[in-house]
Image (cartoon, rainbow, N blue to C red):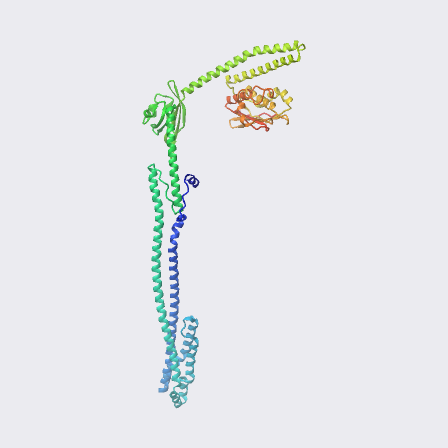
Length: 637
């Protein structure tokens, strides 16, 4: 059902100020999911931020652990320096300098490693600024030059002086200062590491809380939105289901409420329109059924249908075989067992063929037509048929044929009997004109000439009427006729009229037809003579005859540039005695075109005209084509 039809059948709904504009099904399902999707996106971003923070915190904690490890290594190196230096000064044995020498080698490397680690770390998370590292290196270097390292060197040369240097406490103060710097750095790194552990734990807990809460909320919102959207669809579908059940019971439901989902609203309105259309069609079907029953009740028509076995399943009206109550449930072969014309028709229809024929029942005559109906596999599932009582029509047709025959015979006899006194009138009038013409006055000579002219027209009319009557009495003869030779004879007979009117007649080669010489000659003679008579004075007259074969027929056109004919008279001119001009304007009897029509129809053809006033005319007639397919003769120049 199209929307324009719905607009024709349904009045527009009143606008509800509080109602929302209908949305599409896609919008109805996707819009409610927008908030859960945004919430899920927020959860995703939160988790991503938490992961990033955790990764960053882990990196800072790793850096702090690296720093602690390096600081502890440096502190161990410092302890080894001091321990080796003290042992050597106390024992004066070289073996106690072994830790001292090893620490002296490792310490620059460990300090360089710490400097490199601090340089590569984020300055914001660095607890030990590089200047303080420089201070630590300076203290250790100064201890080596002026403290413990110097004391070791002096001990080798002057032990007393070395002891005096130890008692000053200079070396111990430098190494203690280095220990304090390292201890402070270690404490700061431990605080940073603890803070980072707390931050990482809090971030993980927050991410877990946000993820769980956000996902639960998003799922709840999504489920709620889906339930609401499904309920909106379900309401309309339930209304459609109830309306369908009502429609199935034959009750047209009221118009369904408008839905806020556009497709469902269109579906509901289309359903309402469909119901209205079905109700209207059902009412029309009932009216048609009532009219059919009324017609078949009073008309001699029997409508029926048969199943595939030939049993009557529907019957309306009356006809051969009985009425409704007498035929339903019976076999057509039993009902028409005594009708030899009907049984072959039923057999053909049940085989899947269309069948039509005359069936007689005593003095009554019926016309029967059967049409088979096929299923999807092509098998005959039923046959619909009609029988019409044409007894009265056949009687009327026979009476009309007898009347036409008697009328034509009367016209022929009357015309023949009229010719004898008419010839006497013409002969005496002409004799009187020759013998007493000089003695008569002008008025008498004019009156005598009127008698001669009227007698001539009367003779022409009688001749045409006789010829028209013979066309109905004489059965058409069929043999090969060359229209080109017939046309040449016609032009020879009309040479005087054509020359007097200064009309040029041309033709194309015409195919051979299956007809008789005289009818074809009369066709061409009447059409060309009319073209000459109804020419236009202001232009040179021209007539062209052409023809071509179209299947089993030959089509011949006679085209002129004459006065033309108004389309409203195209049918009238082929009726007997119908003229469009007065006798004193254009000569003729009004029988010529009627004779042409009778000739063409006698051979199973037709004649038509295509014309407009002032644009000439084209008369077209068809005749059977010769079966041998001979080539047409040469055309006229």
